[in-house]
Length: 589
Picture (cartoon, helix red, strand yellow):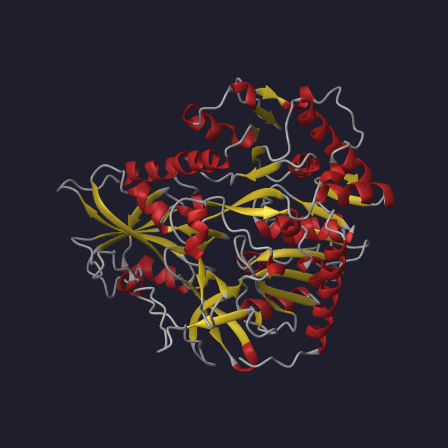
C-alpha cells in the first residue's frame, strides 16, 4: 500500500500526536496518580467529577484517592501487588484505581456481570493480594468465595447500601483516621509500569486479562480526538471496567484536566437530563446507545443542549445520520480499537459507516483469509496476501514500539494473537480477529467479528465460554453457540443449537434458570434450536457457517426453535407470527 495523501484534519491530528509522543519520550516519569496530584496543585478548585447530585474538585478527588493509597501502604502493600476490584460505576471506583496507582499497585477490574465459573477464573488469574467488592456485587461474590482460597480479612466491602450480610471488612470504617496527604510513593511511577488488568473475551474461551501499563491508560487518543480543554465535561454512562470508558473517558479527562461525569449504568430515559444537569460537551458511546436514544420520545432536555461531540465505535451509517440530524450534534467521531490490541483506526473526517482510514502505510493491513477454516491465504513466498479495494479480510495491526502492546497476563494466549513475517521478514502484527472491508482511498468499514466471539449489548461474548457452561446442563449431549443478526438491532444475538442426550424433552424453565445462574445476562442465548445432529469440519471442529446463515429463519429450518420472551421470562416456541414480528421490529427483545 502506498503512503496515503493526508487530509488537513488527519495531518493536524498526527502532528499533535507526534508532539505528545516526543514529550512523553523526554519525560517517562508519568502516571495517572502523578497527573492527578499535578491537577490538584495547579487547578485545585476546578471540577473533576460529577456523580448524581455530588461533585468533586481535583483537590477533593486527589484527597479521597490519597486515603486509599495511604491505607494500603499502612497494610503493607508493595509495588506490583494486585488488588482485584468488582464494582459498579461510582466515585469510589475512581478513588480506588487512583490510590492504588499512587503506590504502584495493579488494579484488576472484574466485570460485574460475570458469574460462577467465569468469575472464579477472573479472580484466580488476577492473583490478588486483596479484593474490593461493592454491595451490588456481593451476592455474586458470595457464591464463589469458597472457591477462591482467600481469607475473609483480605476482602473489603464498600457501598453496601442494601446492607447485605457478609463476614468481610467494611472499608468505609477503615478510612476514618487515614491521612489525605499525598503519599511519598506517587512519583516512583513510570509510564512502562504495569497498572491494570482489563478483561476481554478475546476470541476464545474464558475472559483474558489484558495488560495495561500507565502509558496505555494515559493514551492521548480520546483527548486529541475530542480536542479537550479544561472547560469541557465528558459524560460516560459506560462501565469503567471496560477500556473505552477507562482509557478514552477517564484517561482523556486526566490528560485534559477537564471534568468527568459518570452514572452507575446507562439509562436512555435519563440520558438527556444527565447531559443538561452536568453541562456535558462530549460523550462516549457504543453502537447500541444512539439507537436506544432514537427510540425514545422527544425529551424536554434536548433543546439548547451543550452536547457537541461524540466518540465511540460500532455506529451504523443510518443511525449515525439520523442521530446527528435529530439531536443537532456537531461531531460524531467513530474509531476502531481494542482493549488487548496494538493499534487502531480513526474516522476524523466523520464519514458515516466507516471506522476510519489507513493514514500510515503498514500500520494497519487487511489480509485474505478462509472464513470457514480460519487459514490465511499466502503467496508463493509464504507471505500473507493483502486485500484490494472492495475486498473483505482480516485486519492486522502492526506491533510497534509506540503501540505499547503488552498482550495478556497469560503469555501463551498472547503468542496466539501475534503473527510474524506477515509482509516482510521480521515484521510483527496483532491479529484483531475482526473482518473489515477495504474501500477506495484506504477507507475501512467493519464487516464482522470472526471466529468464536460476537458482540451483543455492548459486550463481547465468547462462544466457547457459553458452550462450556451449556454442555454441563443435564440432558444436553452437545451444543454449539454463535451470533445471529436481528433486524433493527445492533450486534448479534446469541443462538445455541443443541443435541439432547436422551429422549426426555428439555425442561425450558430449568434450562433458563441454569443459564441465568451461570452466565452474564448478555451471554445468555436469545434463540434455542433443537437438532438431531451437528456437522463437523475435516479437523473435527463444529461447523457453524451454515448455522449462522440459516439464523432463526423458520421458513428455511425444520427444527424446533425457541426464543427468550422477556414478558413471560421463558423460552417459547418461535412460530410464524412471532418470527414476522421479530423481523419487522414490532417484537422487541
